[in-house]
Structures are given as C-alpha cells and as structure tokens.
Image (cartoon, rainbow, N blue to C red; front, side, top):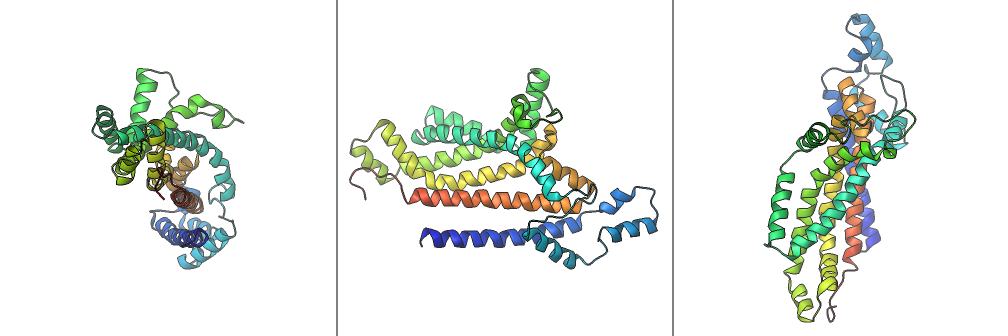
Length: 319
C-alpha cells in the first residue's frame, strides 16, 4: 500500500477512535456521582434552588441530546464553558498547555536519549554485565507506579537532601519553563516512569536485529565499530518506534498523577480538579484533548516507523 493511502486510512481510524472516545468520556462523566449542581448550589440550597440551577446549566435535558450538541460543537472547535467559572474550556486548555509541555517535553527528551543509548548498548551485548544491570534496574522501574516514583523523589530531594522545591509554585506572570528547578522533579518522575519500558523495548529490538542473518552477513563483510552499531540500530528503529510512541503517549496519563502530586498547574492537574468539582464540560474537554494528543503521538510514531522502514540501512551486497 502506498504511503499516502496508508496515512489516509490511519487518520480515518484515529478520527473514528476519537469519536468513540468522546462517547465513552461523555458516558463516564454522566456516571460520576453527584454533579456541578451540588458544587454550585452549596450545602444549604433548597430543592427549588437546585432545580433552577440544573435548568440554567442545561442538565435537565436528555443525555443523548446534550451529547450530540457537545460533539457537534467540539468538531467546530468549541468545547463549551466551565460550569463553575464560566470560562471557555478551550482557553483553559490553552493556558495549561504550556505548563504541561514544560514538564512533558524534557521528560520525553530524557527518555528518548537514555533509551536509545542504553538500550542499544544492552541489545548489542545481550547477557553481559551491563545488560544484566540495566535489566534489573528497568524491571524495577517498570514495576513501580508513577505515584511511587514521584513520592520517592520527593522524599530524597526535598526531605533527606533538600535541594529542590517540593511543589511547583510559579510566580505570578511567569511561566513554568522559566524555572528549571521547579521542572526538575516532575520531569524526572515522568522520565523514570517511561524510561524502563522504552529502554527494554529498544533493547529487545536491537538484540533481535543483531541476531539475524542480516547482521551476521554484515559482520562477515567486515563491518565493525560505529558503522555496525549504526546499521543495527537503524534497522531496529522502525519496530522500536512503535513501542516508544506508546511509552511517550503514556506520559500524558502519568502527568495527571505527577502534576497533582507536585502541584504543577497543567492539564493533568486541571483534570483532577475538574473531576473533584464535577465540572462536566471541563472534564469532557480535557479528556478529549488528552485523547486526541495520545492518538496524534501514536500516529506520528507509526508514520515515522513506516518512513524509516522504507529507508533502512543495508550492508554491502544486500538489496
């Protein structure tokens, strides 16, 4: 299949998945115990006052009607307004996006650099001392939750060795990325959570490639050193990229835990607050945005893997 046709099918599949996700998100918010009426009305409101607020918020209308209206507006770029603050959901997401990016991007860079370097080194020396040590470390990381890793970092770097701030208190009028000391702990927590899985995926891909007749043929033709390593890693990259894109997409889910724990005012933190306050339009808009971002990362990973697969390195004499 030609790349353009394949890409069209993948985009269509991603769009269908996003629509299905929107229905799941809407249903899940409908099933949340309580709603924004209780938060808006307060504990002392009468039944009549609660009913009036429910009508003003449109919560008295059938769920199916509200879903169709919401998804139709979302397709036009309108995610509605927060029930509690009245702010446009799109504006809230835009305000929080740069803060989340300040943590997510450094974490992603650390994961890619360490996973590629250490994964390639371990995959080329399977069973060696370096491989065994890295395997033990990454197994521990894979088996640990984001909450546990973040809590351990808090204990070490804010209690035992207080060199970094425990929470991301950004001065008014400034952005989080302007304060590396505030970014360090949440970014490291996210990176540790994804590094273990990413490194093991790349290690397995490199080891499998190095064990093929293709790599043996390259060695018999005298390809050694950096050239050999580059050839093996380049040919292992397409399959490894699929796994790496899944790991990077998973950072979005991990950011909810990490941002909440470190009080980072990003999208994940905003989502946890919106759920607690039963701000349904905000929960729906944030969830749909995170879902769309996840699908975009996965699609980009598939596209890069497909393009790399068309331009793989080959040893001399191999077509």
